[in-house]
Image 1 (cartoon, rainbow, N blue to C red):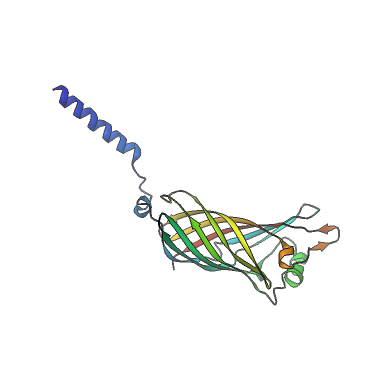
Image 2: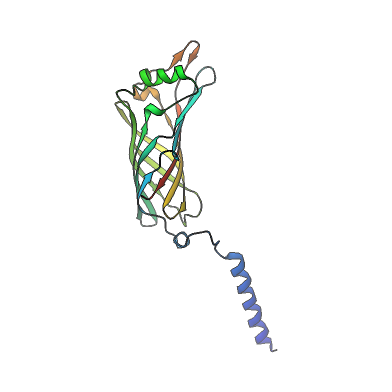
Length: 207
């Protein structure tokens, strides 16, 4: 075997070994490997999506949640980035804490859910996800409406596209009750205060 043949065999062996190390896992969709993400319309899935809030007070605070989140996300490519138009609604009547008395007061006095049954958000998200195989950050901005008051709000989000027809996002923001005209809840020696921490888990799937 000549030296030239030996060198060619060594190069071929190196290429085969590298291909074995660098191969794309079989469970990664081909669209993701090509650097694209799912686009167009996605529906927020209630039950799988959730909103959790934490309210500080002088005795340790309390939290509540709901899984009654609905809405729509429209994703479009924008050069090397992606943008999304978001419209979402939370059923304020379904928000619960671990205290029935507090829940009744929250519904009747603080959120006035008989008059304002939903909390809504309308805004946009922007991201440069790269290949989109792993979680990527997104900046979410828009108008949050609680009761009859609307304020500009920003969320910090981490997004994944685990399937070609689905997005999963985890986001967080702080909201001040005073900005929405909500009186601070009081009960005996418990006095709530701002800010309220809001955490969202959103599952959006193509219809």
